[in-house]
Image (cartoon, rainbow, N blue to C red; front, side, top):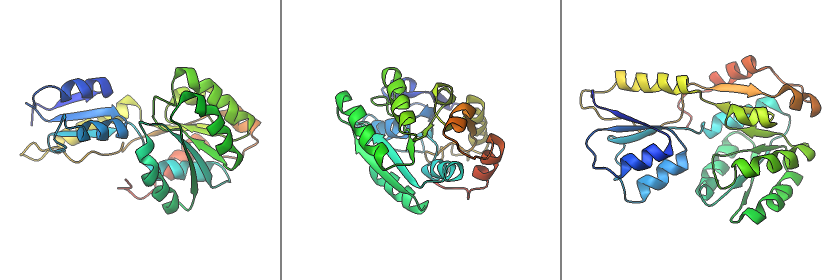
Length: 238
């Protein structure tokens, strides 16, 4: 078990997947959909004992809980692109478990993005961003934030840069938190050297944008209290 390869990010994961499998590979900071698409594409037998992951995205239960703790409404809007369309079923189930409703629009084409977003915002209390580069990329993030802000629907992002740009809050794992999880996996490996199944991040952080909170007139717990509530959620939520 001393020769585990840790591949950081999607490009590294894709590069390693093209090579012959000599060592177990633990992929980190990769979106759930990128990992699933790769293991399905036939490049890799989806044998998680040799090719596993700590996903970049937080578990849905944790994300819905943050929204529930942060704002009064229960209706969550989600934009999905081609990359992430398959998340639809899981999202619906997670929303039901959280006693919330999720409104989903599938965006096939960049031109549909803002019209789809505007439709969603009419019937939603929050917008939840998912890591899909066809939707959330450098050229789209400003118009998405501006449109949701004008509709007074806060955006919940997946990295601190979203909060800086104008999201109300973000739930994410810092590199050091992922590194801690990697270290724990390696220290607890069975003698067979088999990796555990792909998993969500265990350790995470919450950031809030105080200006956005103020301008949307929200009464919210601070970051430390929100984090504490989320850490108290039952473990093992997928």
